[in-house]
Length: 153
Image: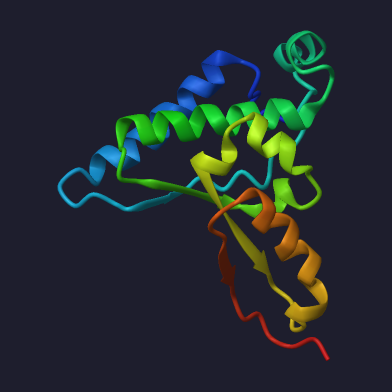
């Protein structure tokens, strides 16, 4: 496991993440931010650290997606509990091929708003209608975020 990867099954790592988020939001107390983007798309090596290995079979039936969703739920509940007017955004990657029941099981449909992104020239091809349909089954609101990085052809 890489030393720069947080082990989300380790409560100490989660405490550091929560503390970091709370520090940023506390800085915005005078001018509250209506949104905070927590990323959540680059969860590398989930299930690799010792803490994850211990809890995966017991708490999540060896389904690392459930561990990730539980982690996202913890972050989102902490944010909205401390900052009730702040909406939690995150990249949509974790939800691309997830059944809607799993999103609802963790309450993510009420806690977070996915942001769909793509850095390609043909968004119709790379973000097909079924992607939007699947996301709309789980979420009442979906954001789009993109950046022009030039055309390759």
